Image (cartoon, rainbow, N blue to C red; front, side, top):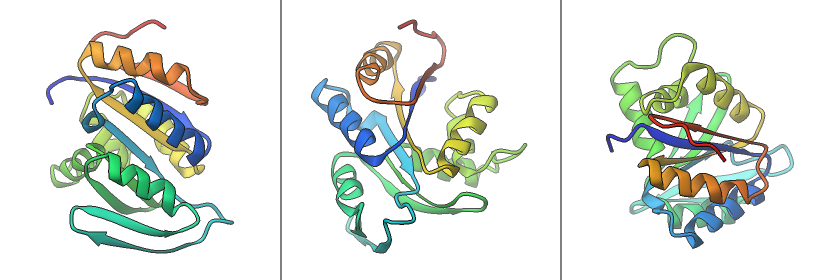
Length: 176
């Protein structure tokens, strides 16, 4: 994708993030343009394990149904062990952006692997740092990337969900 338009939302819980993904799907947002990242566990939600089944990752544990459902909808999944953050689960095109950033040594200047992936699609460094901080505090990032029209539609849907923060980045900032 050459578009540098994205809407990023932060969700406090996996339930809120899951409802947002379902709302976006019901609104006809292309699931190939959607990514989600989160630690996937809290102190009371112990993960028993992860495994790869073909092209899909599976997870056991209290939030396994959440991630399992997302991995069924989104394309690409990975578990990254990020210093200072811990294990972060990622699903969607953000996986490829992170890998490309790591392979291209884009990760510099105080941003980590996830930040490098976000920066590679045009998200400003100050926003990237805030998004990485959200992950450190057990929140979930939802990113929809695409044309101005697709991002505007996704932003409209996201504003109807229970999010704690939402911002549009790109060539044409949209007003909601």
